[in-house]
Image (cartoon, rainbow, N blue to C red; front, side, top):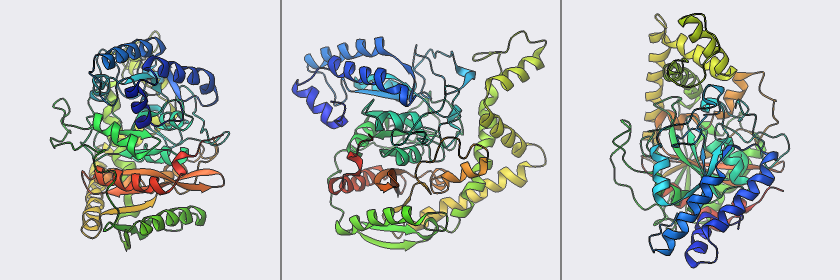
Length: 481
């Protein structure tokens, strides 16, 4: 059963071939036996999962099932879960138990899905390798000592290792697409505002977006059907009708116009990686799509703008962790200032502290206009590049990452080198458009993802394009040994 997709498992449950309790036990057994190799989970909620599975079986017996009733899955440990520890991969929240559910959590609960636990992540979603977690690094199932990507590396590794069929994730600068690419699974970052951020612990509020990781595009569509929608509790949520994302998966690729941004096929991309991406694009041409070169002239400025805007927003968002209201508190503070400084120095990891310092500097008097304001102006130019490109083409296709999964520790001494891992993904977040990563081949025995980028609220088109590619290729079915 662990090799079946969410769609397959839903059909198995509907037919009565297997019960949710049986299915849940199988996946819990796999987590217990296998996750010591990957460290993809921070918390496993075995008792609660079995109780939810039993309730799901009763719901099915009563004829009240949804496609998700009784399906096991996992939440990235950034989504608040009522009564279940939510750490965000940080010592600061090591023992935090939320008194409420995030909207995404509540949606899956209402759909009858069975949460098996909370997956590991880079601390406060800051990282590209899942090595900054207070609970230890996650290992990519495709290679010993290889990183899974970040910050949603725990979700991607758990799905790749067949510990869960699907997992929620978040993407601030590539944190769904990059780990999906490095782990050989399928991941979708929706349009900014499509999925509620209520109860999703904030890193950079204007960039964070909840999304999906599963093995197939069809499974991602099933997840988005649950997650998408307007939420009055989130001021950035957009009130727009939500389609059935599974309804258009089988539409033809004939007439689809694909744009290849010339800036993304540069010296930063190895020839082997480029070959895999171009091979994938040729498959689309066989399916009837046409291809043309386009330009995103300001793409080269994306990393510089992002690493001003994101740290600035992180500096503001993380100021709430002060040792007073909740979270970690230092022992025996001498006074209020000592409480603040030691709590934050001891509670945050090195990468989080680095970004808080950068962000605080960028927002300080005398530098706000020079850095933050200028970065926001560059962001508008990047957004306009995408708007102009989508006047000519239906989707953009590009690499996700400049290289396959690298060795743990390889880039830890040089933060800038680590930041460049997101060179092809960051502009999407600055513009707020949707994008996804689809398995598209291997380089040196490690998975490679194809990035498909769409216009605002074109998730159905992206999922359709990904699904059609997966009907004629088997990269998404490959299993790590």
